[in-house]
Length: 402
Ligand code: PMT
Image 1 (cartoon, rainbow, N blue to C red):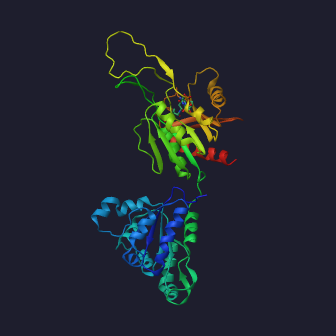
Image 2 (image 1 turned 180 degrees about the vertical axis):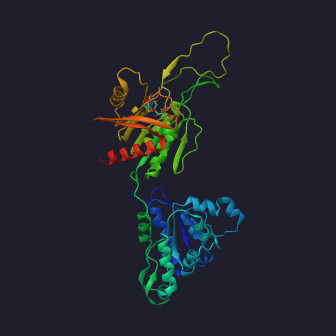
Image 3 (image 1 turned 90 degrees about the vertical axis):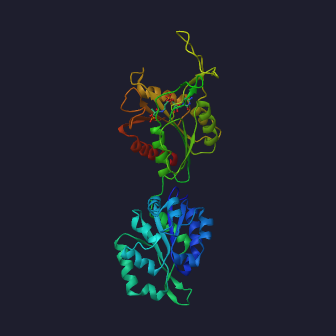
């Protein structure tokens, strides 16, 4: 299971013979699911070329602090914000001293100063330098500031000495980095989520739609990505920013959403249908704007295909979750209608919300839901959609594991 799924690691490479192993560190971090960017000190570039690190990481390598072009592409502050964790491997005695003194004399030390993310260093140096009282004092001071110290290992050194100071192996660096995070409950899973409204064209300027803002679905996509899932969000027209670490596919009509959803759902582990899909579309779509003439006009509608039912009917079926938008005064109540949808659409779970309450459901920041499954149901009272999404993801991940 990739333990660094959706995590962003900034690998710092400083000057030392162990820098040749940094290439392998990139690979091992990527194998664990991380996206890796590399920042190198001048000393680091003497031992391994930025080109090698760029080819392996798949991202431009950052070396200069005072380079307008590089700063314009992704500056040191942006890099420090981008990283979920900074790992410096190898960390030379000189760079460790720089960290202790809070120096910002080059790009990498500046990133470390600016970052609020966890910092880990894998020291690599001659055994005498490692044993030196100054280095040991520096290491203790970094430990006191919650910097994670990976190693060093003991053994034969490049200079011929034997003792402590070798950089630990790339596999161990990746494993220790992953240990800094809780393993995501959806790591290794592919999750597909529909969100927002659909628009059904009447003519080139008019359409039938609904009040869905996409907030619920986008919050679910963010929560799924945060839990480590490879997340695909299929979104109707909304004015929200595409979430980070999520593949967002924009669609307009129900039929477009249907085609995209079925293509993505094939082979996925979890499908969540939070979109408010138009149940019907006009049979005829006028090529030209319909002129205002008669006092009344009739638009004949035809049913749209049901996306979530089609996904639930796939031969290799994912765990399928539907929503139910109900009105409180509907005969039989929320649970009755949600249970009807659970059975008719062959779903594993239905999340029902009362859309007659303007403070929840459509276009609000909060929601209150009734989670209905085969056996029983659970009410989650009114709460912010982002928090609700995380709670739902935890619940669904538990059910998936069960
Ligand atoms: O987007 P927000 O402003 O944040 O609002 C959130 C929400 C109210 C839209 C959301 O919480 C919600 O209730 N979504 C489902 C809306 C809906 O269309 O419900 P429904 O009861 O009509 O449909 C039942 C289920 O079938 C839903 O999962 C729906 O996505 C799915 N469906 C419906 C029709 C269709 N052709 N294909 C479908 O997949």
